[in-house]
Length: 98
Image (tube, rainbow, N blue to C red; front, side, top):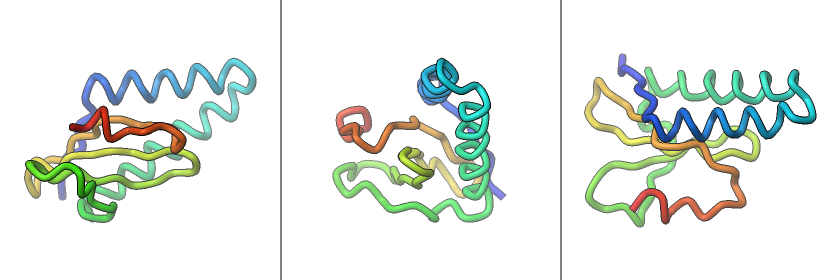
């Protein structure tokens, strides 16, 4: 089973999402953040669950989706997954991953 490691940047993205939603609905913010966290936990057993970013060729970067969010992650090894960021689907996240 792979360990999940959140990068500092990914943790900041998740916190920003929480704070933005919480400004109008603290309960919804908690639900979204919890949902994202639970979706990420699936990677522990299925690290290649997500679609591969074809534009990143020098490392295995993938993404999974949760609602309107794209969760980018890097497979460092079979035992380590790094969460790179959580982005709204309207964003062009490729510029953050290259």
